[in-house]
Every structure is written in C-alpha cells, then in structure tokens.
Amino acid sequence: MHKTWRANAQMLDLAIGGHPWPTRDQIIDRLTMAINELTCCRE
Image (cartoon, rainbow, N blue to C red; front, side):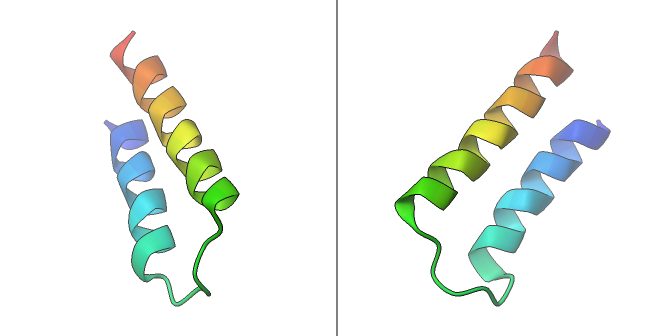
C-alpha cells in the first residue's frame, strides 16, 4: 500500500509541485519509476 501511495505522490508532485515544466525525459523517468514500484507492489 505504501508503494502505491508513494507512486501517486511522486506523480502529483511532478504535476503540481511548483517545479518548472518537466522535460519529456523527466516525465518518462517518473512514470517508469512509478510503474516499477507498482509492479513490485503487485507481486
């Protein structure tokens, strides 16, 4: 459950965290990290 919450929080921070617009690579890195964490959580 913690990893699910953490993946969601990371994506939310990227979207509204007051950071400059993320680059395509930053978005891909963040999505990949979230997907990997959720995959580990499911197993």
